[in-house]
Every structure is written in structure tokens, then in C-alpha cells.
Amino acid sequence: MHPAFTRRNSRHRGWLPRTLVAAGAVSALLLAGCGSSGTSSTEAGVKDSVPAQDRATGRGAPDAKSRAPGAPSAGLADTPKSGAPVVGVGPKLTRNASLDLRVKDVATGAARVRGIALGLQAQVLSEQIGGSDPGGPVPLEQGTDRLRVPNAQTGFGTLSLSVPADKLNTALDQISKQVGTVLRRSTSAQDVTTQYVDTESRLKTMRASVARVRALMTQARDIGQVVTLESELSRRQSDLESLESQLGALENSVERSTLTLTLSTPGNEPETSNGFLAGLSSGWDAFTASAGGLLTAIGAVLPFAVFFALLGAPIVWWLHRRQTNRRANLTPSGL
Image (cartoon, rainbow, N blue to C red; front, top):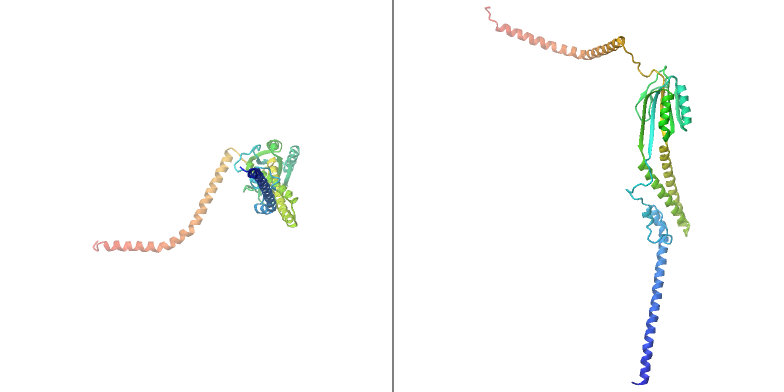
């Protein structure tokens, strides 16, 4: 083979690998640039869409940089799992009680109640003491139709106490023994565990949501985003305060119980007596009551009886006369 042709073939074989390597390097650089551009545009899109998504869903979301790889989205993180077991939450009960007492003097009994309440760290919520008729029926318990109508000779008073829940039974026992004679004692309890857990869960979610909106405000780039985020933060802060108030009221109802007391002097209860005279008096009262009822019934029926008698008398007379004439016609004339 000619030497010149051999040199050209060798140069061609050396140039081809170098060309392929250069083309591969250029392709790699182009792909790297496209990937970086796509990532940057995606992150920018997430940042720009956060306020709009936050307004639409009612929940905030962290930006793409602060979110850990594989972490769930903010909207899913805010949603509590329904039916999940509640861990570390004991039963939440609200307890209330009422106590009716007969005392010798209402004012003295009320003073003893206040002393017992002071020793048990209880608070007197309301007090109404009167030695005469307060002007009408007095309800013994709120929300019931049990009434007592005191008279001018009967002392009467009501007190409402807020007692620590763990000292409610102690308060009932001490007041029953030291104040007067127990006429009626009742206690009630209501389970508010579900309501408590639900409110507490919503409160935690709302606190996290408020924190996210505040974090987004630090990333706002124009006045429009700042105004939108401030409005959203104000709304969520209001919801947060409302949930805090609800949870506080539930905690207070669980930690403290309401004790309603009724104090009355002898006179409202009927006196009981035994013996022959008591039986005779009771029988006479029953007889007069029965006689009075019978006379009342007769008086009610008498006008109707008179009316029907006047209406039926002519008919009876006509029937009687007709029967008499028929008998006269059937009798033989010779007899």
C-alpha cells in the first residue's frame, strides 16, 4: 500500500474517537443545564403558588426548600387521622351535685357553708338568703321544674359553689354533717373526653397553621402577598383564640364542679303524726273529700237532668195515655 494513504487512514482513525468524546461532553453539559433550569423554575413556581394555595385550602404549606425529601404535604399533615386511638388522655368528666338541707336558721347555715367552702378552696358563685316570701316559686335546680313556694314563716336560701372536682364528695359529706338535715342529695357526671380531645387536636393544628403563615410572611416579595398573608394571619389568629377559649372552658368544667345548695327551715314539709286521733282525722278528711267530690258531680249533672226531664215528661204522658186508651178499647162492653 502507498505510504501516504496509510498515514491518512491512521490520522482518520485517531480523529474519530476524539470527536465522539467531545460530543458526549457537550451533551452532558446541555442536560445538566436543562435539569438545573427545570429545578429552579419548579421551586420558583412553588413559592409563587403558596399564598394562593394557602387561601384556597385554608392551610399553609412550607416551601420546597424547607420541606424534607419524602415528607408529606402540609395539607395532609394538618388532617388528623380519624379513628386513631387517643394516647395519654384519661377520661374527662364534668361533675355537678345538688343538696337540699333543713336547717334551724338559714343565715347560720349559710355562714357554715361559706366556712366549709373556704377550707376546701371552693368559691361562692351566687347566694340568695331570705327570711320571708321572696315573691314567688323558687327553682331548686337550674333547668328543672322542681319548685318550692316559701311562706312568710319559712326561711329559705340558695347557694351555688364552685368546688374542686376532687373535693366534691368531701364538700357534700362535710356540709351534710355540719350544716343541717339532708332532704335530698344528687350527683351527676358527663363524659366530655371526645369533645376535649377534638378541641385539643384542632388547637394544635391551628397553632401550626399560624406559625406557617408567619413563616411565609418572611418570604413575601411584594406588597400584595404581604396584605394577603396579613389578612389570613388575622383570621387564623382569631380562630386560634376561639379554640383556646373553648379548651379553657372544658378544662375548667373538668377541674371544678358546681354544687347547688338549698337551705330551708321547718315548715315546707308536712308534719306526720300517729295514733287514733291522727287516723280519725285522716279518715274524716278522706270522707269530706269524697263527699265534696260526689256533691260536685251531682251539681254538674243536675242541670242536664232537669232539661231532659222537662223534655221527656210530655212524651211519657202521651205514651201512658195511649196505652190506657188501648186497654179501654179491648175491654168488652158488657163487663
